[in-house]
Amino acid sequence: MRNFLKQVFFFIATICSMTKAKPTLPYVFSTKTLAGLGKGIGVERTVHLYSKNSAKYIRINNNSVDGFGNRSDPNAQLVLESAGFKGQVRIKSSDGSRYLCMSGHGSLMVENKNQGQSLNRCVFYQVHHPKGYTAYRSKIQANWYLAIRRNGAPKSAKKVRFSQRAAHFMELR
Image 1 (tube, helix red, strand yellow):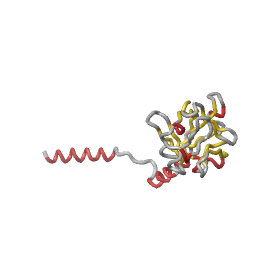
Image 2 (cartoon, one colour; image 1 turned 120 degrees about the vertical axis):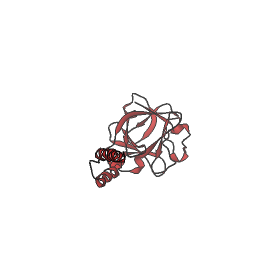
Image 3 (cartoon, one colour; image 1 turned 45 degrees about the vertical axis):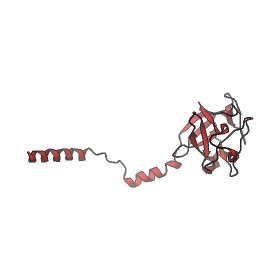
Image 4 (cartoon, helix red, strand yellow; image 1 turned 180 degrees about the horizontal axis):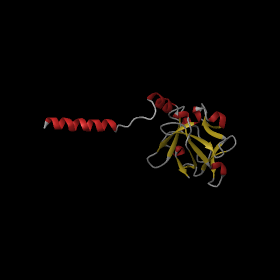
């Protein structure tokens, strides 16, 4: 009986070793690929960012950002482009020529495509609020949030907290 059990065990071990999944690429190449994903091709989706505070849409004009947009306004149509792991996104105009960025002083600004793709100040983390809203936290400063005042003007990121209405947005398609 012991001989039979040994043979069955050996047979099962042989079958299991033959069915193990083997990586298609060597481990070294896989880690290089993963390391470059943060700078690779981004996934894009077209949205309208509705501000809870101003009850309007964010729009990127030529050199400014405001919260005066209507749903039919072509400047209010924005593109969210993934910029890395853990909810990192870039917000750009629908034509792709301008990026929404945050200056070192906490004010919102617009950068050209060439500069916006490579700068960390144009990257935001999406933070989801329990009530269904989304806030956009700056990558350069952990406690700075994208915010719009009630009158539609941008609010300084230094004066905004996650719990404030000025930082709450809805992504509408």
